[in-house]
Length: 97
Length: 333
Image (tube, rainbow over all chains, first blue to last red):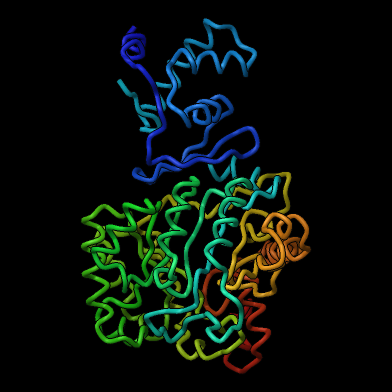
């Protein structure tokens, strides 16, 4: 419920300007310059980060995941919210009003 | 996670994950044990060539880009190269002696390059020792001033030291100084012949106990630090990722498997980085040398010039400079 409220108020998501990343096979490695952290992204996380090179709405992100991965919409929607919350906590992405 | 999952894939796919750019051999200090061959001839890469190189490396999925030298801040296009590196999404690391890191330069670095880290060289804990090694009076005081102002501005700083006969009595003091400044201190080395084989730096080779004290000081501060290189069961153990995970480019466009292995794999005046990385046998040879070295030290820890490590490039440079000072450099130490 809480996650749904957060996501509902977000207009678009974009990558934090202090984030750098590259693809390594089907995974990604991400460096957060300000936090001094190196994070490993799985295929879905990498896809989200790559998609957010341009700001995107949650709905656009969800559609891109459905286009890319064989997953039911309800499951993808729930997983996406968890991903976005985790990535926001790590300051990998920012919400824009 | 990064060491155990990403790095094995980097090596398996031969992605040049970390690339060092020796931008120039010019320097505003004159360190006694500097490994650079400042007389090395060559035609420096132009800014246009650096632009092409950076775009190629971004396409090849290079993530970490190290600017080093010489003193990289002395390169005339340092900020243009750094700014483009930021635009292309590299995690930039800068290795500098800190002498030019005055507040206006630090501000510009932060604004235009946004580096992941800036690492400065520390040679001692007092002006007498530090300046003796840099051979520039006042360099210690200036370094401390620059570090404090750069840190206040928000640059992510670290320091690196090389144990020598001149500073080994201050190893603990250097760690304490960095603790006070809030900087991580890395230990590198060993002092070795210059890249052209000149054995002069060996005159200030430290005692073997100096290295033991340095290692203990690191362990006290980072007790959980793993020395694992993330080797997966599918790949042969190697001492480092040379040949499969990164490369070095000198100021004249020579592409090297590592900055101390001086046989070029190719030159950017003649070929693209992608062509050199894909086709030169130099990288495979370096990789094999690293695997062979790991086999040599599978039963006992490595030791080289007193340091608890083994570098195939140091061994190569020692071979270029046979002398009594370095005859007992490896394994028998």
